[in-house]
Image 1 (tube, rainbow over the protein chains, first blue to last red):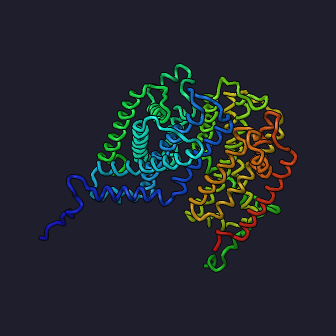
Image 2 (cartoon, chains in turn green, blue):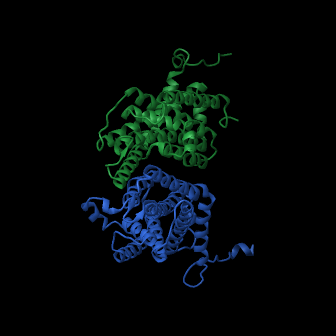
Image 3 (cartoon, helix red, strand yellow):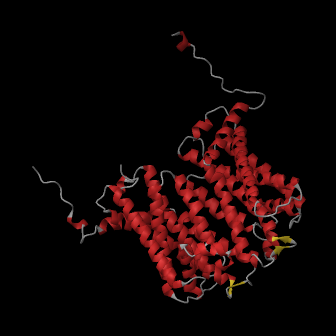
Length: 267
Length: 271
């Protein structure tokens, strides 16, 4: 009897199938780059529209927390685009593969659950950050911004992208039709990204909402990100770092668990 | 055997009067049932989004006594948000239904039945208008819970909501007929429709814009729609209302005729 074919040696380098991870990641990135107009340019244009509407409607002379409104608004808009796009990428990619039933092509190759998690999440992170860079470039044109603390900008930028990409993966895996993904986007992600201090300071909230906000990771991401730019924050920025790290830990573990158990993927 | 040799002549055109009323009704009903089936996305989602916008503007700017002219800002905003949702819904409905049929190639099921180009145009446009008007009603009801909405003139409200729905349905049909993939429809939506609905006075009075931009607005149907609709609520307008009404009627007539022409020639539909 001939021996069973062996795993090609080159696939495993150390304990991780980096070739496989890179292939899946590259596939995820190429997927959205192919529809660049919808995935990168459209969010940039929409964010830019928000900036126009808010500044034209209310004049550039408003002051929020001692800052000109446009300076206050810009970090919020950049963060909003990261949140929405990192989520959209992972969730639509997976639900589409499930609907087309070509998800098997992702599950069959010798990729461990951890490798799948890594590649899908990084795809979403890449899109979120690409949109953020596009948005920043477009907005910088109209309102030059200073950076107060680059560490906070990077931590919250990447932290938000990771969190939303992993939430997107979980949504994509859980959803059975496109409708489910749209429902989460419209009724969870959109409200949270709109109402967690993107456009206004949460000090405007009534007492009860303010208390709830203390537990909202979206608030800490937006607030911490804005602190990185302006040096002003509504919440405690140190607690923010902890909350974002903890939230990421939960969602990434959740993704891993879903792939590990094959929840709604294998039967 | 005898049955096979003399096949029954199918009734090719079940007419009642000048129109194939039955066919038109079937097309209309199918379209309406389609969007009712996903009522979460078609009605609830736009209502939530509009309430979010309302909340944002209220939270961001409350307590500053902001007003547009003598009208409190919230009252200024409600008509703008309503008509914006009507327009985006109508465009989305008309464009996506036809685009989807083209992609999954079920469009033959619409082209084969004995419907004339005019009947197809009317069926698609009326069903989209239905969705737009219902979305507008849902939104206005949802927002009136939070904001005091008073009506200055019902005629303007109805006329402009109908014109908005009609216009966007025509634009949606044209886009879907032209488009070869969903990407094309989304591009038109993101880069033409969305900017026009956002920037034509939904959120601010056009008088806040530079004079040069204000002059361009004279040729922007979106501006006349938003302005006229808002006049129906608050009784104040930035534009010449009569000019707007004439302009919209002419534009919609032309757009409908053009849609019918596209169906008639089978542009991007029949090969």
